[in-house]
Length: 166
Image (tube, helix red, strand yellow):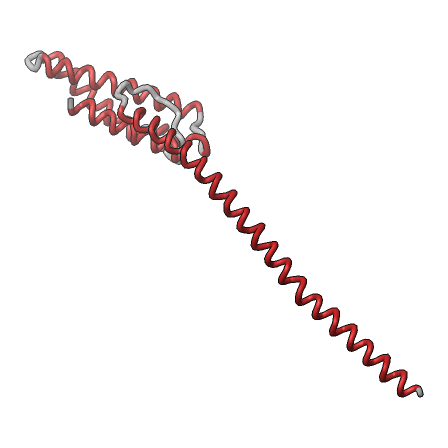
């Protein structure tokens, strides 16, 4: 009789164990389907937010093109400065550099209008040395660690080149 009870008890344990494992197998399938739906919703949400971000980037890009084409040499904030702000000292350096470019362009225009004036030729020579010296100033090296600053310098140099080509 004891053997019979042990056999029945063993069989019932095996049966319970098998029934629990079969439920465990079914449950993850249901959960994985739910997880997939949740993941798909997350992907849709991410795609939606990318579309929104893309439109704002397009607006920023249009403003950026206007800024780069504007030859007034006014320093404006660019997208890169959001993630990597430029220090006040470096901003002042950019403004001073822009003023140096304006001064050089002005002298260049005066020389073009009156190429015989030796005084203007001397000023142009001095202004040319000054504009070339900006690249080796200590502030240029200190500030050039910042990507936004580097982009601003690139924009100013492109404007300088276009102003001098006129």
